Image (cartoon, rainbow, N blue to C red; front, side, top):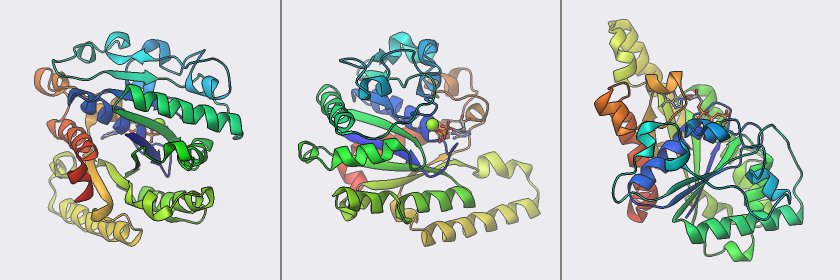
Amino acid sequence: MLVFTAAGKGGAGQTVTGCNMAYQLALKGEDVAYLDFDFGRPSAGATFDIDAAARGVTRDGVRSFLLGGGPRPVVLDVATRTAGAALRNRPPGAGRLVLLPGDRGARWFGRTAEIVQRCSELFLRTESEYSVTVVDLGSGRTVAVDLVLEVMARPEMRNIVARWLVVHQWTRLHVDAAGDFVHGPSGLLDTARHTGLDPAAVERALRFVRCIVADKASLGRFGQVAQQAWQAEMDAELRNFAAEQQLGIGAVLGTVPFDPVLKLREQIITGFDVASVQIARQDTVEAYASLARRLSDHQAWETL
Ligand SMILES: Nc1ncnc2c1ncn2[C@@H]1O[C@H](COP(=O)(O)OP(=O)(O)OP(=O)(O)O)[C@@H](O)[C@H]1O
Ligand SMILES: [Mg+2]
């Protein structure tokens, strides 16, 4: 399965959510490849705590490969390359988790037939070696979005299961940007149509993820009655607004709460962080695990 993660606006939480979901998929026994297609500022290496790829790699990243640099992009095994002690510990039954890192430094490029061909080969290869390929497309309408749409329109991709996760924060501007990114003029669905894909099929394969949600456990603590009433009112307003933007609950795969650990540091939250050192929220891990479950369980995906 190919999973494209995207966002309408920068800083939505897409990379941290995608990396944590990939980790939970691996814990469930899936073999997972995470491809960093953020050609501006790749950050999955830092999130997985892999020093050599913290700002992207200096050679053989996915962009170099797509631009014709070498026969294969570098593949980093997270459990052996990470500096995070808890991540190195792979429990029995867990699948492999690898990162195909981005290249260091921003560089934008136009699509050529050769780049599209290489991208198609890359997806087919990871599809044959891993059960799930997560592709981090960066934020907004980037060259990565246009590239993968063009690849998915090709005949050799017809039998590949593809899913789209659009991550957004639970605020007015983020909801608005995510709605625009998908449904707006020149948005994802429009572009899909122009590329020769069926926009209705893309929409059926697309869900939103509400991220960094200030829930009761993170907000309610302030405790004042007036604050709580205001927060409930704002939340209801946001829910209405999201429904108007076609981001209503029927199109949502899951919700990730605000976690103080992730406010301070982009990282994977492990069971160790929750149970042993007790710095992270159990709810956060459960949210990522639930995303992983709903994504890989066909029935759970369909019955949202
Ligand atoms: N559940 C959460 N609770 C608190 N902070 C979070 C949560 N998820 C992500 N963050 C923080 O929000 C910031 C943005 O997250 P992230 O880098 O994943 O977003 P992005 O959409 O990938 O951004 P970019 O546009 O740079 O690619 C990071 O500092 C991250 O640690
Ligand atoms: Mg990112």
